[in-house]
Amino acid sequence: MPLANFPNRVKFTPEELTLLMLMDMTLFNDMGPFDDIQDSLLGAFELYRTKRMALTDTLPAKMSGIRGTTDLNKATMIKIAPKATELNSLIQWMYQRTQQDSKEAWELLEKLRNLLNKEFNLQLRLEQK
Image (cartoon, rainbow, N blue to C red; front, side):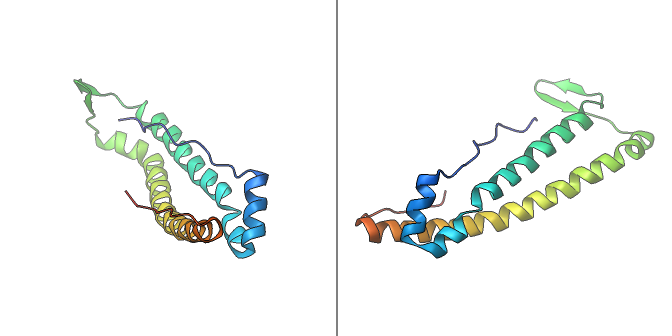
């Protein structure tokens, strides 16, 4: 199955960054690079999709409805092994990076929520789904 559509890229506006900087310089410094971090990870997902499609497009498939199967012989496995290894390495990196970045992003969102609730007397809540 092809990879689904990706989320839109995030870009903090100068106004958002200025307000955050005035409210909490440490949080500003911590959040500042996160739009670039998200862009980098999305770029890796796009690269994976492109490389995966390039590899799978070279393989014959027997279709049964929307499910395709490919029988690979030893010669074909030897031929695709370098590209498959590259994809496996990329997906492992993406998984590790996603785990690390999502944990850090959640912590930053909690800090931002607390700051906004305090500064503007709000009752914002966050919930992971």
